Image 1 (cartoon, rainbow, N blue to C red):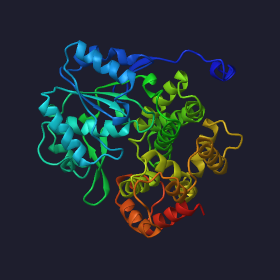
Image 2 (image 1 turned 120 degrees about the horizontal axis):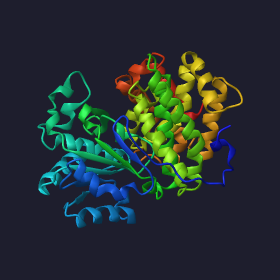
Image 3 (image 1 turned 60 degrees about the vertical axis):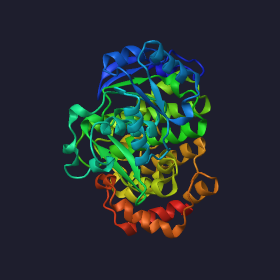
Length: 406
């Protein structure tokens, strides 16, 4: 048994640090935020626009970062006018701030919302039209001139979406309340500075929701059909890290070792899902667009119901996953029960109805809206790699189960 298993839970070891270049330049470890000035100069952010989640701009470490930039003469300004489920106007406003401040480069600090908006700002500062002109449909991505994408550095503050290592962003189109994927290979930030200390202030409920988002990314990637052993291996290790360290992060928010491993698991999940996602995300995207529920929370609620739908085609893979999670029994049921227990431990609502009753949805959801959400889910790109084909009626049935818990 390795040292990680032998030591007592209370016997904390120094959190790991590392530099590597997969899938992009990635530097992780406590205190890496203090390298921001050198990083900006190295990657061409000569006068960076700092795109940030509004909830972090008063944190002491955030002021530390912006003060470092200002002292070094990089003339930063902060843009934090964005929503939890970002919309096109957030991108438009960010592009305007970029030009108004005569910036060069985007320093993106935050969770999935800031990362998605920031990457789109970097895309749109020198490209015409709407951000939706570059939606991941057909050959839209070829409209982008790669040389006109602004330099970027990503500094994640949550362990969930993994957008810091993604080539796409999810933006809500308010015209039809749909979430659309904006894609181009150059939207992958050339550098990630991952400092676990920047996640210490994340509340427990958001730590839980974002952490299960990371798990679901890895789970759906692992279950997606097709031959991709690299993605499968990364997904399995990401899920193992989530299982071991997410409860610790929720219980003790300043556990540096656990936070480090969860940041890594988040990036690994997003790296793995280049293989594909599935039904959970296909439902969560339109559900979030309609209700404004936190994306990770939606995934967490929907996961076991999607597992039941896909059961016949993922049972064999659950044997491997159960072994990776070190469960006593190696079968579908053991994994399902473990997921249900994890959700309960983390305080995740069991049903969509409970989530609404507890105030997790900004907009009210009626059961007669579930059919429309199911129809939207059939058009979501994530569904194309679900293990089992789904009709709108199939998805409606899954959503009804998720609503009532039946």
